[in-house]
Image 1 (tube, rainbow, N blue to C red):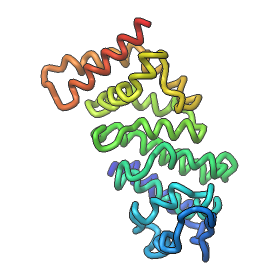
Image 2 (image 1 turned 45 degrees about the vertical axis):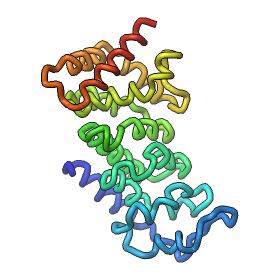
Image 3 (image 1 turned 90 degrees about the horizontal axis):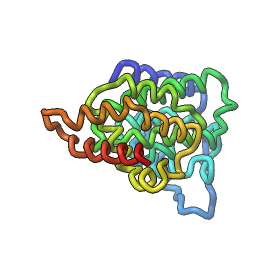
Image 4 (image 1 turned 180 degrees about the vertical axis):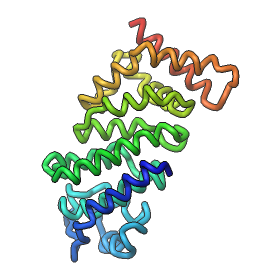
Length: 239
């Protein structure tokens, strides 16, 4: 794990350590949340909770299970698992929970710790194989949480690695239908991220790096999907 990412996770644990696990965890009686589900949250120290222990809570936190203070207790581990086990839950929805938690009203120290982690998470996501986890879900989460993508996209421009370029290709292929039919992203993308990302994809530099990777003589894994993504981008540019 990169040093910056590791440090940002430690900071989350430190900043949110004042939020203790409640004596009792309350949930809606109309959902299939069992006492066994709740007991799993109390079965281990926070840093040892596994994805299976937290999966049900992650889906229902604050909407039908618990309040903001309880969510803040689990927040460090919920987000750490995005690194320990990429894809363990929907990154878009997990990051979007920040909006449900009214995080714009949190103390500066808490907001700053979350922002620092999310940008370290983003930079790290560009270094991993898209087959393990697509970075698109993180950007969608930014949109749901009301976070601008400007800083994240600047990192994407700077990171010229093969994996970061493949991540662009995977996103384009995933959004193929919306891009081809409407010249835009699917409606589940929220502004300001939606407009920022469209502008990034339409940049000459983005097409140039895909073109260079497509014609890479090494024929590395992912070359075909990069070439497919380049075709999509060129088609959109002709519209």
